[in-house]
Amino acid sequence: MKALVTGGGGFLGGAVVDALLARGDEVVSLARGDYPALRERGVTTLRGDLADPASSRAAVEGCDVVFHVAAKAGVWGSTAAFRRSNVDGTRVLLDACRDARVRRFVFTSTPSVVHTGHDIAGGDESLPYATGFDSAYPETKAEAERLVLAADGPDLATVALRPHLVWGPGDTQLVPRILDRARRGRLRFVGDGSALIDTTYVDDAARAHLDAADRLGPGSACAGRPYFITSGDPRPVRELVNGIVVAGGLEPVHGTVPLPVAVAAGAAVETVWRALERVPVLGAVGDPPMTRFLARQLATAHWFDIGAARRDLGYVPQVPLDEGFARLAASLRVGT
Image (cartoon, rainbow, N blue to C red):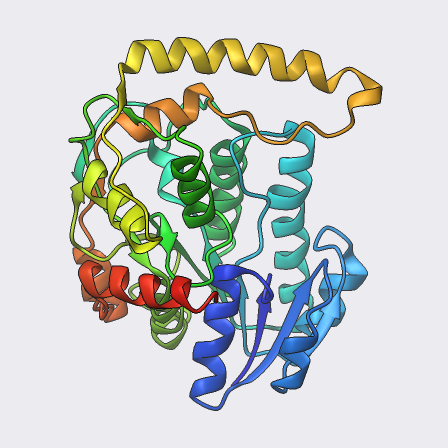
């Protein structure tokens, strides 16, 4: 089939591209940046803004399925910037798919759309959307997911996947940040580090996208529905973080910060960061070291029942966590 992958040059998007190419599919990538490595592998690469109708129309032309992986992610930034990328871009892409008669649309969402700052233990897709958010990222992803699921119909079948904490070799977000803080002695656990969370190895997350596309069609069991995607093996956050730290050749981390202290610090840091961003001479100040959203994510349990994905998508995690840590360690040793 011919597939469009938005954000094909990114971490998860790149893994989806790899999985499609491995089975012989034709792939188009739409991204803001230029990725020569994709072209060298036979991918048609297009540069453009998803919120620009012309870019989206050109990208979906002739495609059988769209994997909408691209998003503005992070714990900090203006709501307007998140909204343009995550909501407006999704809306424009859906319109382009309808006009081009694309039949299948697989959307990469996030479990954060249901996270309220409290423990989630074995939650399933019956969980409601959160009604309040500490960050523009989950807020705009929830709005985009609603758009995608509401668009499902006889001419365009849609599905939303919620992969949880995707990681592995090539990660440009979670792994580098954990290792950087550990090297600088600034990594601490919020709470005692015992909260259970689950994660998703990148190859499994990519496989789930292909599973969804292969099962998706008008009126199919997965059409118009969201699905949690994980490795199915929740562990204490301390064990997961230190698995990455040790894979990076560093000593395990043991320091802790009480949750109320971390939340208060996050609120204070957010105030300072907003003030700094209003000083023109400083330019971009980057992400703050702590926010209220991040503090609660680190201290609360959040793991999910993937029974629905197993049933409706045929999804089966293939890479056990310990094997994932070994693969990550090997990749970091060779500098990949």
